[in-house]
Length: 129
Image 1 (cartoon, one colour):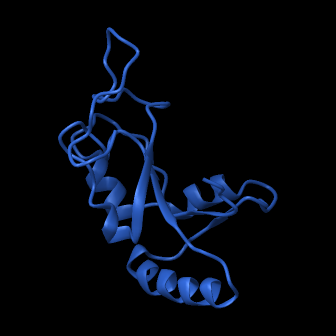
Image 2 (tube, helix red, strand yellow; image 1 turned 45 degrees about the vertical axis):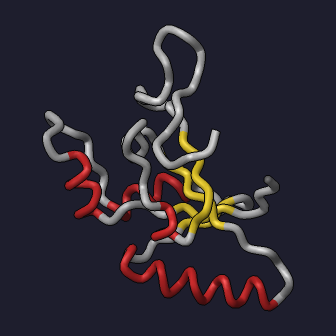
């Protein structure tokens, strides 16, 4: 896979609050603050921040697909997320994002798809090896 560009889609505030519901004293930055953290002090040359509402994303993505394919690029969307969205028996419906592939990591929190005793990944429901 050769990734030439990435778009970061931070969750809307309501979605983040819902995701963290039940956690004791969660640290929640609003979307504008999270966008500023991603952008840092200088623009990045490897990713772009989508700072609009998620409800506008699908129309934007469709338009972007049309423009990119018109100039001759092959577009393949890949969902990148954490283990809070992917579990052994619960894989997100990635097609709703226009994706056919998903990349997930346990870098920031435990994942139930990694065997604690053997350095081996468990099979995810509905996924290939």
